Amino acid sequence: MTRKLSLTPFAAVQCLLVGLAATAPAHAAEIPKYFFKEWTITSNCAEAHAGLAARVQPGLKFKVSRDTAAEDGTYTLEALNVGQQTWATAWNGLKLEYRPGTQMTTVPADFECVPGAEATSPFLAMSGYVQSAEPYYQPQHWYGLATIQGQLEHVLIFPRDVNGEKSAIIVLQSASAPTDIQLDDNGVIISRN
Image (cartoon, rainbow, N blue to C red; front, side, top):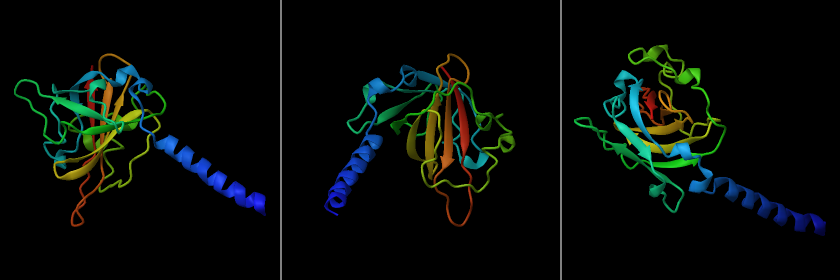
């Protein structure tokens, strides 16, 4: 009986330590170099009713810099305006956390889309879909939570270790919707470096 009682606190402490290690913020050295690049938006498949803030214009640029590392392990998205094109204010300064996982070598079929034909995408066609908890994806990515066009959105950025087209994919997943109407603000924004 005594041995069981002494093992119980030990097991509890071990579980606590494992839990803390699992949620510890990643240091810049643990994050792949290609996560800290500059990308240019090439196409946007946010749904038409998602609003102008979600329908980011092709030609705009963004980056995540190692220099923006905060003590809590977050990094800041730097939305870069180009000429007359500007990002909506909700994007600049978005806090991102690194989520480890497998390297994304190809773009998943669900993330492929043609601007103007969003309803043909399996991911975007999920009308009325709301994901309140952080969505889980196996590939490594940046994750943030932002209010865009008045809607709470999960923002996931999947950088790929390639140059050129589709080197980073931004995925928006609705985290909230008004109770009187069901808006599906999901979107996929394709970028190149």
